[in-house]
Every structure is written in C-alpha cells, then in structure tokens.
Image (tube, rainbow, N blue to C red):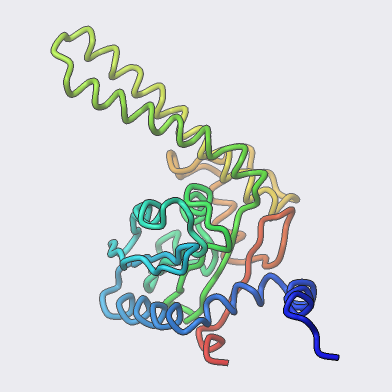
Length: 251
C-alpha cells in the first residue's frame, strides 16, 4: 500500500540528515540560480555579496559589500524577521589575512546569531568553490540575542540624543552612556561568539577571546589557527556545520 502524504513526510524527516535538508533547500531552482549569480559576481569583482531566502519563499535583493565584508542586516527587515537561509560570499583571500580559511569566521557566527535564520547561514567560498553552511542553536540565540539587540538599540538612542543636545553637560552624559552601552554590546557579542566556538572546540581554552575589538587576543588567534588546520564539521552541542561542493547543487 502506498504511503500517505503524512507518512512520506515523516519518513523523509526521520531518515534524511539535516545536512541533506539544507542541501535540498539550496538546490531549489530559484535558490540555485541566485547562488550562481552570487558566485559570478564574487569571482568577477572580488567583493562580498549577500541575499536571503525568506520563510515565505521570497528571495531578497542582492546586497553588495567590499572585499572584506557585507552588511546583510537589511535581509531581516526585507523578510519581516522571518529568514530561512542567509547566504553571502567570501571572495579570493590573501595569505597574509585572517580570512584565508574555509570556515565560518567570528563575524559569520555573529551574523547567524543576529539574523537567526530558521534553516541555516551559508557562504560561497571562492577559493574552494564550496558552500559552507552553519547554524547556532536556540539556547545560545535566546540567551544572547535579546541582550545584544537591547544594548545596540540603547547605544543608538544615545547617539541620537547627543546629536540633538545643546547643553555641553548633556552631550557629555549622552557620550558617556553611549560608551557604556557600546562596551556592553561588544561584551555580549564576544561572549556569544566565544560560547559558539567553545562548543565546537571544547578541548581548547578561549578564555581571553575578544571579538570584534580587540582582534589580537590569543583566543582569536587560536580560533583562526584551528579553523585553518583542524576544521570540524557536524553537530557540536547544537552548533552545526557542513560543507558542500558547488557541483553538488546539480546532482
């Protein structure tokens, strides 16, 4: 007797790995076409690009960055805070730069936390013609994202207050509050990203980890070294990573 639609769905869910589910999402014709576009633009210009797949199936506009970064946060608003996939690109790297790795950077982990895609974040790697996908677990998102966004919002409000203040004492007060909230924001970002990478590499000590500022700590250098020499793929306490060859999209 043929399986019902519900039985077929359950069979798929319980017998297919999360890695295959993400790959199937990337292989959808419209998504694959957009991936071909991001690959072409990245190889042509040497810049980073980004787009998103919204939960309703909408594909966002392509955002252009520079050779080191792309600000993809508008994807969240374009998807009405419901993102399934966040995809960006890493252009060809340089041997003397930290980004000479085929692994999520600290900034990549932060953007996954900030955007909270339901399925995964991914990047196209021009050096290896691969698509690396990764996601952070709900327990880390729920713990840190509200703190990060609250500090960010409050810091921005003090900038606005400073701009409109006429009294020098008020300006000083708003400036001091901005510095305090900015430090709180960076502290929460650091702790969130540190918890992610510690889940992947629990056997190493990242106690002095500090990103995005400063970026010359031993913890940061240790992560960069591990990402280059000992990249780990799989599920680590809910932190998930997978690598696909671009040609896998056509199988």
